[in-house]
Image (cartoon, rainbow, N blue to C red):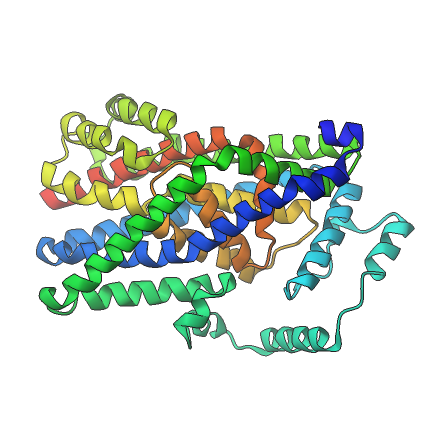
Length: 442
């Protein structure tokens, strides 16, 4: 606000924004190895599921299914409310120009060229788009080849692209995160399929490495207030320049985005989870009692923004209040605190669509499918610590060719959303544990 009104956008870009760039680089540095080792460790820890029989399969299946529903709810609400389209067409066109410049500099192929919702009305802006710096012949050729390859690919090419040819190459490319997730799942399954004494060194290594990366997240987040200020100031300065009106438009869009996310979280807490549990428990289910039983865990989750911090209270609420057997709670809830991030996944879906809309990008069906798959599987690798969803959002944005630095736009309202989505995560853990317990008793 001060930068825009005082004409200090150049100063902000030169002396404050670089610290925000450092923050994004640190998040990207952590994201891939965190997902890799977290998924391997999580799958390898399911060796007990072999003893517990069908409980393990049901638990993983329920967590992935509820996460996919959360992502779908987020996508539907984002496309119905269209929070990113609430700012002026002129501002969206400016954002689109900057996106095309970024895409050109980073070798991202832009599949959407229509941008019907932000057709230019200003001849000068049209000239700005057409007069972007020309690309080198090599860049043009590579992008044409990539575009033609995508256009000519068969219906199963999406599945083929899940399989990495070279895991080292996939680890070095944020756009290949699905290949990293596939490798992690397969490696984890391989570890629980071999003799325990042979698997133990690899599991111990992955577990300790995962702990180290979780510690890295914690270290980075300790400096997050400063980095977030720098990144937010830099991104807003680049988008609004010295125009206070443009900045106010951004804040208006953020308000609608925040409302969309909270609406989606409320749908999950007060509609989806109760209906799911009612279908499973039938006459035993009581709507009001569900929230009375879980309220201590939900309040702690809201205040701490951490599923892991709320885990002991969640286990107490589930076993003492909801009467779930301790054996089921001890198995299901720790897995949920690691891999069941429904609120986080919903927020990532809304955030991705919001950022695309405000930059004049009309996402294609394949990109929506990529959001569902990436956000669902990324929830397995989300750390149960405050703001870890930001690390995963960087991954989701990169997977569909959007600028990960745009997360800076979301920071002004992220804290309250982080607290709210953690409540959804904890409520989802408790719901799944109650469902599994009901099935095990039948």
